[in-house]
Amino acid sequence: MPDPVRLLVASRNPKKLAELRRVLDAAAVEGIELVGLDEVPEYPETPETGATFEENALIKARDGAAATGLACVADDSGIAVDALNGMPGVLSARWSGRHGEDEANTSLLLAQLADVPDERRGAGFVSACALVLPNGTETVTRGEWRGVVARERAGGGGFGYDPVFVPDGGDRSAAELSPQEKDAASHRGIALRALVPAIAALR
Ligand SMILES: O=P(O)(O)OP(=O)(O)OP(=O)(O)OC[C@H]1O[C@@H](n2cnc3c(O)ncnc32)[C@H](O)[C@@H]1O
Ligand SMILES: [Mg+2]
Image 1 (tube, rainbow, N blue to C red):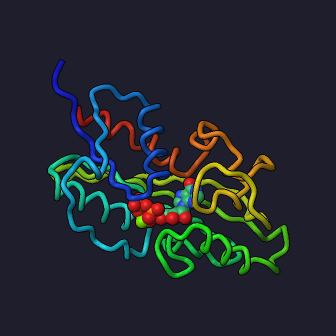
Image 2: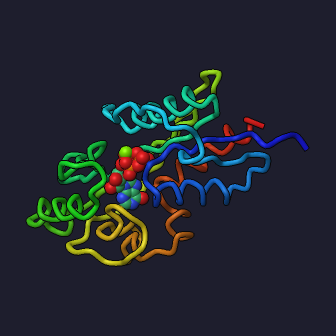
Image 3: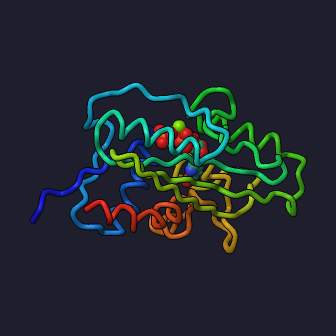
């Protein structure tokens, strides 16, 4: 058996990282070893200031591939709310001002939508996943998960806006789904599964 190909999974969000690993593991691509950012020397990271999810995912994956010489996969994601003309979008992680403050971000979104009636609370989680190879080859995929923004939080699973996002076709929030249920339907699950053929081709 040849040595496994090492694939860097570039995310600083432990809960998102766990989802990335779960979906890639479930795809059971043999001969690929997933490597986390804590297993490679630290490298400077370009700010995620792209105008689109695709640009930001590429920023993260290009940094990882260039710094380590490994193939690198990265996700950039967020929630696009219809009544806010697609915002927070690429600003989802820092909607309340600071990067990664889930509680404050969710509270602000609920407050902004307080007067929006039930029939206009549609939203979509969006994920762009990028795979960048050391030779410069780039592949980007996208997934979307439609639902509505609830009026209050429910559930303790997931992360980010999950407690206030109720996916279409059910009445539970994303934070009330099992990890497997979330992976099967989610934006990131869709985008990552679309990337699997390109990952399998690394071997
Ligand atoms: O950039 P990395 O290090 O991967 O981790 P991050 O958490 O900063 O991730 P993003 O920059 O892509 O920001 C995505 C934000 O969108 C939200 N988000 C994305 N996917 C989500 C999901 O599945 N459930 C809930 N919120 C999600 C969440 O608030 C994240 O902070
Ligand atoms: Mg980020």
